[in-house]
Length: 314
Picture (tube, helix red, strand yellow):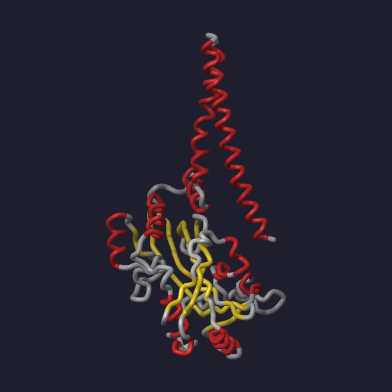
């Protein structure tokens, strides 16, 4: 019900943008018509009044047309913040672009422990870019490493960066275009690191990794109180397609106690691990985890971008 209401709200918001634009357009046309009519009839007072009203309306017309071109929520919020004076051209925006695996077994989602935050989260992490992309960005879209997270051999060339607001749209466009980064045809790195390298499962017993692209979750541009930056967060949701044997391997994990992983229900993820009505009041599930819920698929954009099933030998 909540998801349906959210979709209706987005549709209503777009309709209101259209009506607003049409109001200013028609009103401006009428005023111009009035000016022409009174000038033909040598009525300077009527022409002047029409000009005054047109002068009031036209400055609102062009922004309303521009609003219609903001076909993504993040673009709309960016523009609103700029108009409010909260974002300047040189305001630093923190970006974190990642991919997250949806692994669902018998109605439960498989999560792994983040050793830094001590919270459970989906398998996955920040996209990585190659040296060629680093060189391109240095020459065309200046970026800096996210100074809130230490850069080491593990986090080097992660898509956790700081970019000036004036370059943000160009940066996102480049992210979708470049071939010098991890791409949909092989997203096995994080899967291998977080499941096989940690000895949760045996790579040889698991076999090939098959998955399907579900769509993209993208936040609004908004101020993040954790890192004290305006932020834009992107997460591509990847659903793992398990064979019968692979499902059995995960079911075996369900019967074992391990701090390395947990299987969480929809309700547990929505409450971030807090057990309502119990003494379990610690939020031990990361706040980005709800993005993988199958119940939230209709919130994703670009759902039809890739229709094929990808299969990787690992």
